[in-house]
Length: 97
Image (cartoon, rainbow, N blue to C red):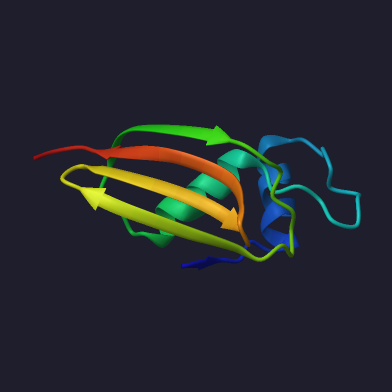
């Protein structure tokens, strides 16, 4: 699944948390919490029990990134990549069952 986070979404995130980090650069970094939130919303998941993410490399606005995931029971393992470069890896545990 392709992930596309826009500059407007990054600006809205920074406004929400009252921060301006990286917002003035021509290719700002997508904040990790915004990236994970976008992924969770895109997958339309039931409520989460926990999330463990490991951020390996920065993800930039406009960068082609892809989400790959596999679900076994209540656990989803995921990877966010750009080409062959691993950007984020982690697990999501769903509540229930």
